[in-house]
Image 1 (spheres, rainbow, N blue to C red):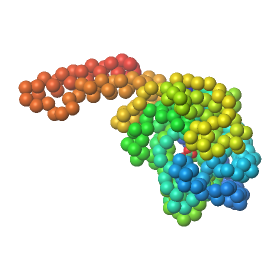
Image 2 (spheres, rainbow, N blue to C red):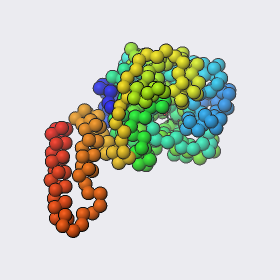
Image 3 (tube, rainbow, N blue to C red):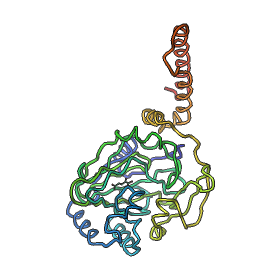
Length: 346
Ligand SMILES: O=C(O)CCC(=O)C(=O)O
């Protein structure tokens, strides 16, 4: 399932070490005064949805305004211009040989609900290095106004090409892991810089005021910007379409949320076949470091866990078998544990 083999080239080695370990870092992008200036500038823009998406879009988009889903092209163009002006220098200073592919103004109006736990699309053709998102708060973000929450260290596990309509195999376990996400409050002008593959969510906005953030999508400079989807004809195939900076202006909600792309098809690849059970997703998080380091694959972990549960009696063993069952199971478990140690070198 894992495709990425190199980390993101942060220019600051300390940020890089923290990003590699946790899957995210917090860093300052703008002064509080400049963040307030930018917030005033974006607040004066006029998206067609008035920062509050219609119910059909809200139902698919997490309920908050994402500028690329708006029907007003001139507005989207203005968001892109503002983002280039205010952030492209920051991206250059943060990551060597990365570029700003796309920018989203993310506005969560009062009373809008939580964004459920998820990972973000990989939007580059070959994911040798991760897609990096920079989520910059334009006012202080808190638990009350819907700041982002992350599961620290949950990155780098599901790295295959991911995008609209692809089931990466962990969907059934999301409810079980959602409670592990911790809020990351930010000061105005600070950003949460995260690996696309980290599990994250955002809280409901109960503050009574809109919450403004810019989300910058950053990819290695030599990579083509793309979007992936599950083939409508064959769920065993992932289709990859070009989605470069200018393509985002023409991309409507159907493209982003339903995978109805109109850009050229770049390639197809086989999809991962492994579908995890809820408890297996928890197991993957528990062994995250081993999986990230490549000493254990999700497939090995799942195969071992399934072999163990096949040997585990479904009901407590009664009567004559009671003496045999548990010691047989114990021997089998010990055998599997030693196989796993051999496989992982631990
Ligand atoms: O802005 C938000 O509230 C949610 C953002 C998010 O989940 C994302 O950028 O993937």
